[in-house]
Length: 388
View 1 (cartoon, rainbow, N blue to C red):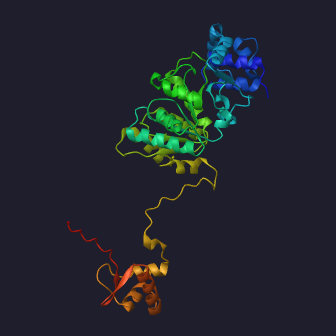
View 2 (view 1 turned 90 degrees about the vertical axis):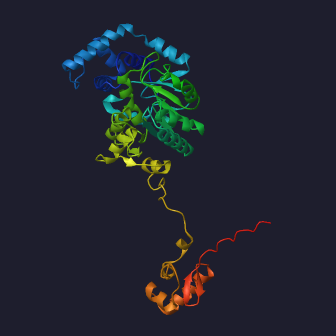
View 3 (view 1 turned 135 degrees about the vertical axis):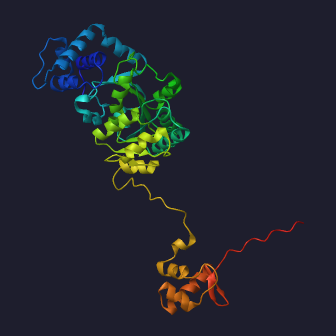
């Protein structure tokens, strides 16, 4: 399916005049398309039936109309092309179908910069978000998780910020994985500037994604709005370190609203940067507690295939014994010795069974004969070597 140039130009215009995710604009586009919605904004077409017009809606339409004079969508598209970017719309092969779950808050278009295909990259993608003022513990977990998920063939999505976001991106890139950074401004506005080298590397191995045309500066409101995009592009979201008030918790809320798996990594109980994670784990319904990539994949992967192994302690020699033989072994006293009949009574077996199993245990090196019966075999301590 090819999106007509007029439709693409209309969507570029709408990106320039309206903040991302405006429900009113989303309803207009859903009913009359982007060109029809732009005509309504210009006042050349009436508001279609089924779109309620409140005082707030009239104010929004007036504000968008006032901004039309300062827009130049052709130049925006030219600049995007000049920096190696592209704009995609619903109907383009690269458009991720998962964004349809946002309903009226779906992006009007997306501005991309990078080598990866967005739709393909999001088929197996997980979001990792968290605190900007992250601790060494948090950044280590984020980097390790990003690397392990990338090794498993998953795309890591985050917001490109300092702290947890940057660590997740870097961990993914360290193993030549694919990562996506969702911007709150244009894809030519590297923010924070300290991550410029990181963003340039992401362009080579992944994607920068924005709902705003080039030249748009990030703002606090746009950071919050873009979080719904992070949640929608991923199969699930992992929160690693989040304060009581955190943008990561906003992403977590969007993840829940979309019905996607929400996961949180626990931190030290007295850490202020983990207060938000612990709250997510206590809420109803709670976020899923995850501590490694296997547990993340169990939540977002294929049912019955991506199951995380059950954590186990070290394998001990007596773990391989059958229940009867183990019962005989455990019937021996920790110190001293016991007779065969005494061991049989304590183990709950007959005398011949106890005799046979004690012989097997002796051959395996677990027990040995003593003057008064049987005793546990103790490993011999090495004798200290004599100096020459």
